[in-house]
Image (spheres, rainbow, N blue to C red):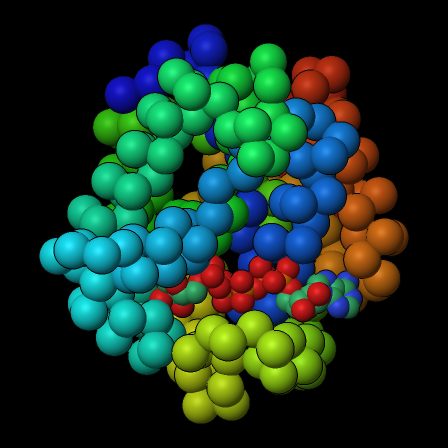
Length: 214
Ligand code: AP5
């Protein structure tokens, strides 16, 4: 477990293609966060030579299903520990070693519970929201060059379903705990970035104590 007096965790959630990764990349420039994407960590593990989980991860991702919690949480914890000890020069992350943007996690209630109980408490959930139509359009466009096995219409539809059935309850759970900042992600990347930046600024000033939306 990590010491919550030294570690700040912001979860970044939203539907497939809502813009989580894009906005995290922007926020890293503003605030010196360590950005950890659950999806990126899983794809890296999938491609790691000798990984015992590679094939299993590939199947889950292609089907848009949530990879078993034990694997995902272990990868995240390892990445957090590595960041705390080594830093992440690749992301320009220098002295604010305890600030994490955890993107695409927790996607299911069991992950949320286990992380809260055994890893550390999150301070905030940034929830990017837009229409399914918009998300589909963005992912189909990205699919032309991303090389991602799940950027095709069939996988995307499955991801939408899993998101609604399994991830929305997580957002509701944190909403009831007044931890969710909802950000309308329909606008341009720069406009959404400004909103996200203002949410983080308020968090660091200690101004966020209640649930609020943009
Ligand atoms: P993951 O990699 O997390 O994918 P996702 O949630 O489906 O989200 P994406 O990365 O596709 O989209 P994004 O919201 O980051 O949008 P982006 O910024 O890229 O997960 C993939 C799979 O891994 C899961 O299905 C699951 O199998 C597994 N997995 C992941 N997390 C897991 C977990 N916690 N537990 C178990 N399994 C897990 O933007 C999308 C596109 O839109 C880009 O081209 C971008 O340029 C564009 N765009 C962004 N914002 C805008 C805007 N405002 N206007 C116009 N275009 C925009």
